[in-house]
Image (cartoon, rainbow, N blue to C red; front, side, top):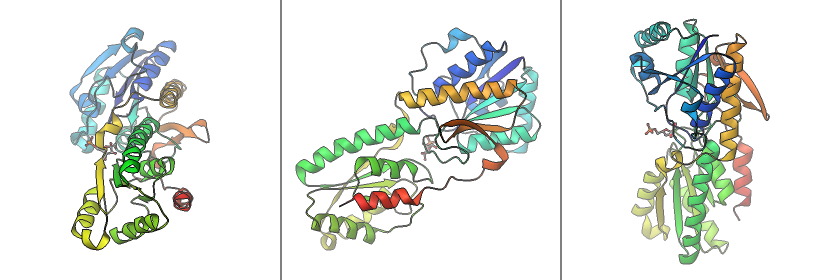
Length: 323
Ligand code: F6P
């Protein structure tokens, strides 16, 4: 394998830069040339390639975001776009590509693999919704950012005896909310995988106050049927009957912008290097990820278009501790 290219795609995730560094330096270690592609699949189609040496990835391991830029590229979702991408890779003499990203990005990698192009995916998204991996690059940092916010809100909630509602990201997946709720000691957790409604949330909160709590915390996943906005509207409309108000904090993109934790840097470094090793060994069309604390590969065809299920036992555990 003489020329390896890499790109970051979809929502940025803390640790992507550590993966970029590991892929670049591991490929150089194997004697390959490295070409970084800017702006994800959009840059791939446009031919936005730049050759990378070891110095180009210095002092980035600690940075959040992605130095390559990222994009959500509608054009690449068409057969014509995928064809243009393959042509562009051919024009630059690329023998293998590493795609760092989440579900949509790995679906794109699978499209390229189906056209016969050697590609490896590196599991990276703060949502941790990818099948074929226990954990994705970025989720640990995003979770810690959410927790810091939750801990701060609990301080003021305690001082004033108030109720707070925090919405976290995750798209259609409740992983971030469930883990933030579990680690942050939430009284109520609302996630898309386990349907709930405002009256249930209200009765759980009322029960918390009846048990003698002076404050309350609800953690909601943005993809829940009743997200922060809907719950807040409902509580506002029924304020007289429900007899308590919820102050709402929507964390949004704040969760994506942090410096990667040690866990994310190490995960990204290991996955990035392994992706190159597999390409050099002649393997392709796989997602490189971590399962049971080991670096593993799973055929992209087995994971694309699926969402990893949540462990309902963790939800029940959180419920049992909200006392
Ligand atoms: O997939 C990562 C993620 O941050 C989701 O949690 C969120 O729903 C989405 O991206 C936001 O996308 P954008 O940054 O394009 O608004």
